[in-house]
Length: 218
Image 1 (tube, helix red, strand yellow):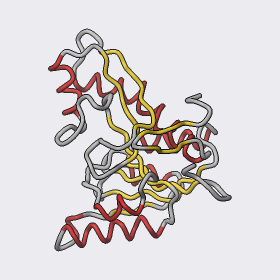
Image 2 (cartoon, rainbow, N blue to C red; image 1 turned 120 degrees about the vertical axis):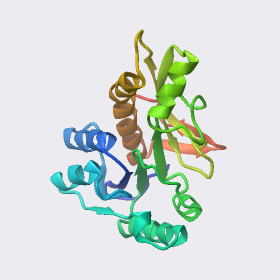
Image 3 (spheres, helix red, strand yellow; image 1 turned 120 degrees about the horizontal axis):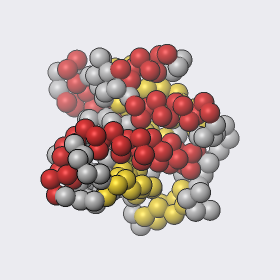
Image 4 (tube, rainbow, N blue to C red; image 1 turned 135 degrees about the vertical axis):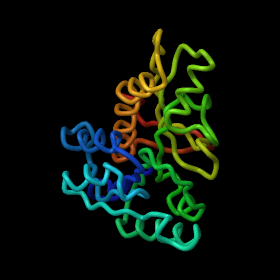
């Protein structure tokens, strides 16, 4: 199991923007849909991210680590990893974090770092597919079903072991913005908290790049 030991699962959430997925996590911790979990910190690469305000309003330690504040990407990568370490997390959650994760961080938090992606991987994922670009590509291709995926982070882009997926129907007259909102509401805000709860309660194992969920998805 990925979560062992006593005490709640210590979670750090990394964000870049508004923090709607962060809010979904906070709400689910507060209402008991995520159990055995404590959000110990929020880190953003963007000092103007509203996600930082969401964290502060909920009494969660929050800080900005921006690449603009350092002379090189290597220094930024070191500072980011150092900031994450300071929270002593059991789980790192990328919730709309638009920064390439340093290899050293991936190695240190192997199978302890998850990401939410707004498509049904392996469709519309990988380099260049993020935010509205995912939904623009889906509508251009004419797919009838979109969705979201929670996966562990590895050295590739959206290639780590898949934990949960949820499909969302594409509707007539959808724009990328409308589809993005529906995918968030019907998929992202549901499966990201669910994945955290499963991991926090020791129900997720990784075997040969596949996840095994003890007791099924319910």
